[in-house]
Image 1 (tube, one colour):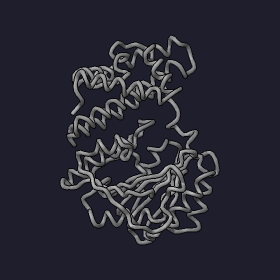
Image 2 (cartoon, rainbow, N blue to C red):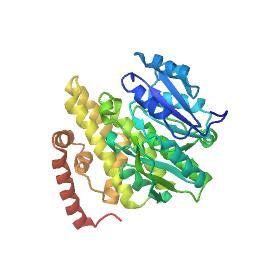
Image 3 (cartoon, helix red, strand yellow):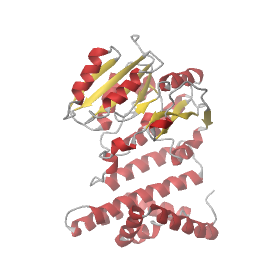
Image 4 (cartoon, rainbow, N blue to C red):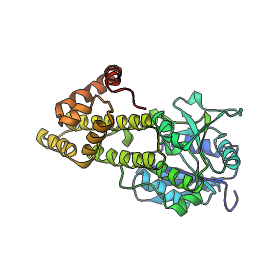
Length: 359
């Protein structure tokens, strides 16, 4: 490894003893030799920290940071600050990468320095690229950032390559006050900074399974839990990302509509959790739900859906502040997602005949 490696790869580590060796071994097997791996032990109560130290003692490319527990955003920020590479990437401790990921990503970055390099992921280990092959690349314009997001290819911080110097000079960091969605805010803020520096740039997507996102390893992750501030948290995330998407990248109306629909649907799931899944006195839970529905984020959603004629099954519960509607629709989603989608598409078709499709 050189004094300034080509790339720094950061892995936050917390309660990861079962999966961490697989993740680290997949990094150490990279075909690109010039990298550093930064393992951030985020106050893990198991022996994950000792596993990190063992890897660092055996391989000079591995560095370890031990810190008090602060969450994924805090751990990623610590790794970002310590990184020395020209470029930066992230990985989760229970995932796995193709041996050619860093090589392929760096090749694209060298050839197209103005572009944001992304790669696709797979949710089955068999889909991970294990042998060298010709890599298909798709190209996306800046204003297609919303389309990338709505199709599930933009927002996961472990599926993209960053310019470390730009991160340092722009001050873009993970928002440690967010419990969920902080990576989505981070990548939108970084995109704004990148294309302010490279206005002719765009997105380049490596169209192969270079990253294995292990869903089974995340059964107890925070993303599957409902924190008390779930609705407030996601409101902040969507407000920030939509502001950048619409005001900076001027995304098409259809993409804005899809993101707002996802926003309201996410809030619907959160309110259903408050009303039907949480413990505690029902009066207190209803008061919390009503407080969000009376707040500024709910007011903005009501205004946008009304003025732009967007459709959502959750719109009338939102407009009427109808707790029972959120409870019933949320229950439908939880019990039978396909039934919910059937009703959504039927409602969308009727809505489009009355108001016309969003263009």
